[in-house]
Length: 431
Image (cartoon, rainbow, N blue to C red; front, side, top):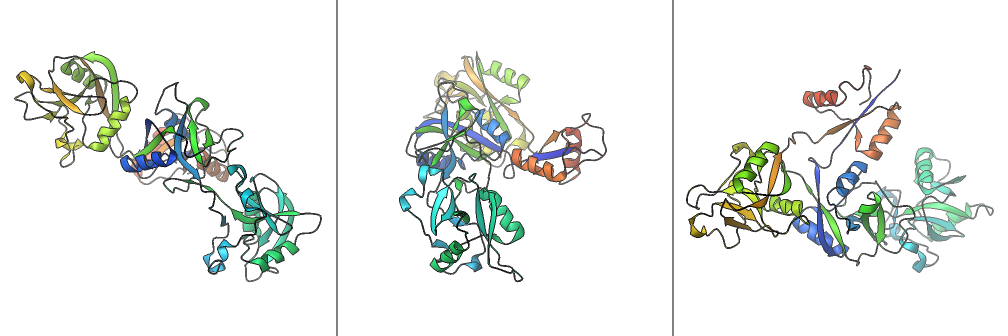
């Protein structure tokens, strides 16, 4: 019997929109900018979003850009999350060998004990370890395990066979744990660790580090456009361009056309190839449109606003009432305009700063079109023609996308069927 795998990806309740900002800022300045104008610095949760992100901007002169991942060097915490286990202040007990070596290179994020003192190292080091067992029928509270495992494997073992890797709350417990280690084993894992965090506090565990990274005391992360979106850690006060994200709540997809046409010719071109000349409903849309042409053009570009009467009844080229919410038809971003000079400036262009000006419709400018795309569902299904067990399929989907397919209704079911229509004819599949 063979199986196929369906999986889907989503971000928030709607797709995520990445915005490249060409200004060079420190990480903190970039974070402030993104939170002010969008949602936050970019969070990346899978390979699909990596590809989406590196396609937001194409400029061979720019390689590195900030994303939202950062390293809080003082964020040590215990893997055991049971708050009842700790009394006030007990979570903060530490027995470092040398405090100034705790954050060695910014990459040592896991703690081991040697002769009662605590040291840090990388997760893939392999050591024996001490488990804590808090179950009622446990024969001992602390259990020495002689198998050599990395920190993550040791944590999984303890959680499967006992309660968790050991947490140490005071000097007495530290001595008890130390006394369990045989003389010929020396070092053991304990349950203290720290993690890098995303600026938006998401819990994504996805990583895309370049080989040998992270490798410095830099605590903030950049993505490399020239290296397939791989990450490196850099000093947070260095200055780089950066990538923000927003929830793509709008169905407008903007397309800059670098061909000079009159306003009427541009309108005809957009209607033939997309939906219409650009309609701009609000300031967030305005910012998105600016970033669509950012780095591509610094002159004038037609948008869809016009007036065919006297210059005082401006309206949008697209008349579809269903696309406008209350008040959106009335958004304007004039710059000391309109003035309808000589009585024939009845079409609108935007400059590279996004400001609007009226101009004769017979002038030739480049222009911005947009498409109206369907966003009725945030689930994107992907067919994988590889035979796996359900658990293997789940692991694959969570690593590369979000999870195995979720089906909310019959419409989703039909979309899933159409995703693989003609690709596979077996009658059984995992969801």
